[in-house]
Image (cartoon, rainbow, N blue to C red; front, top):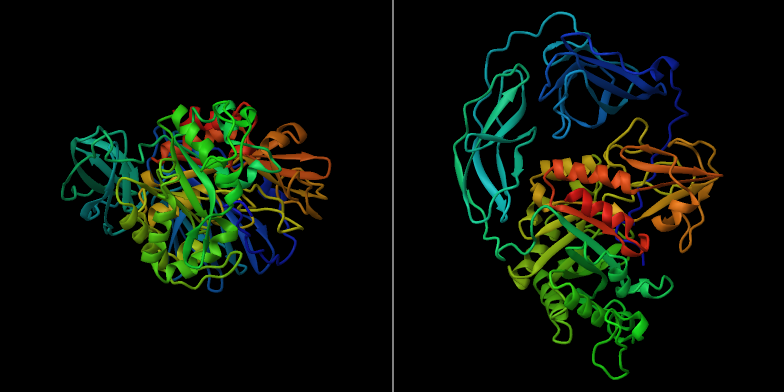
Length: 611
């Protein structure tokens, strides 16, 4: 059984050894006084292609809320992928606008974006916010405001948040962003055509409008207003607000790992969890099925290993982890427990299930609500990791299959039960996220768990070494779109409400051996040894065995001897939780509980970071 985030990224062909000019190793120039500038350079060039980076510097005395870089490329040269910015192309003219999280640049500060390209040419005629990138000259006079956004409507709501969407505005130069107003108060600024306004009161009416703005500061008229009343906080929204802490507990952990339900309590984790996902139930013959009957409800526990200190009897109808979870819920009555089905190994069974979603939903409901353990579970979590795509096997069920399957589950389980799903985090161009209608499925789920870990690992035995769970891209990242911020941005751009997205954290590291380079990007000879599986190790082991020596892309890495590992620490988790709050996400989830220390260092960092 593999972890639910056990994706195997397709190896990227290496065209040649990348030569890095020493002139590009210097820091970006200081902002020119009184101007916004952009400095663009090739960070790697192998003749037939290149990697580039642009740094935007705010030399003015006030923060800017948006930026846009424009330039031309000669015929035969093109930019294929971009990270930390959005790209539009008209012929040979390229426009790069800020992403939703990096449009604001404080006075004297900088931000940057990167890209990959083919051909031997380079950018010409560079402008930033309408002025020359080097700060010479003045911006072209643009006095025309964008058109007002149309069709403002609510896509979902909870007791504390409202998600909105609207049609894009047009402008003579280009729209750089939208301001969302709650009454007369600006509630959010985004670059896409959707937003989630959080921090609201339950059962309260709010009126929202949206205005578009361009790089010259022209602001459109307000959209038509939409009034939305938030849900009743007394139980109409079983998912809760933006501070969800969701942890996976594995059925097989009770064997070699000897990690029992009791350990969730003694580590202090139970008091910090809002939801617990029990993994995994099987998906076979188009139905939900028991994954491990012995671990699930047959194994008897001694008093020492039981949550309440009471031993099981040989003849009780339900023992195993199910009975221990029942005891845990009695001790923590606010804890919600979901039964997760699928995972990397069992995702192949969803293709047959998708052929008859209603029958699949019936089987799942009958199993989860079996009278022997119906009181244990508060809903279902679906871990279909590669719908209409290839993973451990290839699925050809079609782009609508996931949406139809989640719709059938919601219809069967109703509004009083939770329905959630773990989904791909592949935000690469044409990747797994682009072949399935995740936005359409979002209407049926309480939240998604995008698996923002396992982006890179020692399945690429020779490297390059790279952090398996980067928060952001960084120069030299092996695959564009393989980072948390790009994943969240792409899902939001597709129309998934921010409040229905949780950030994913791995309580483990991935590593290589035969590595000589301390920084990411080094070569390797294979997977580093691990306690249970080569190339993977729990955080509780790595923190002592191979302490972190650096950070990149918002996560940590370590070089010890010939081994190179990447993993999250309490500090990097703090940064990720700040990002999640800034994005208005619904909270965080993690894989999985047994990887943490006996005192629960990592879950504590999640809980403290979300507040």
